[in-house]
Length: 80
Image (cartoon, rainbow, N blue to C red):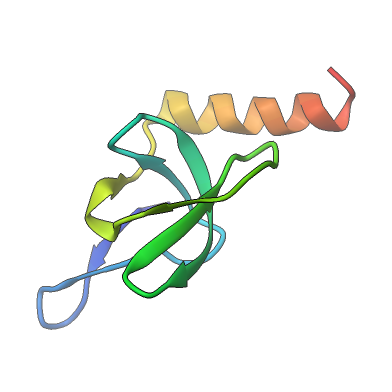
């Protein structure tokens, strides 16, 4: 999944709802829950409180970050 992609005019567009991204400001991985004003709303993959991030401060996760987030979600399902 990519965090931001250029549109036909070369402008970057915010990530789609459901995309897994990383907040560049603090390194936290989050799932895009929506867009409010100029901000992207993220929620931790395991659930929890949402936080707002300017779209220029999100990036795609590395393969390691993506796998770690998916393992955390799976562990929560299994009660670990």
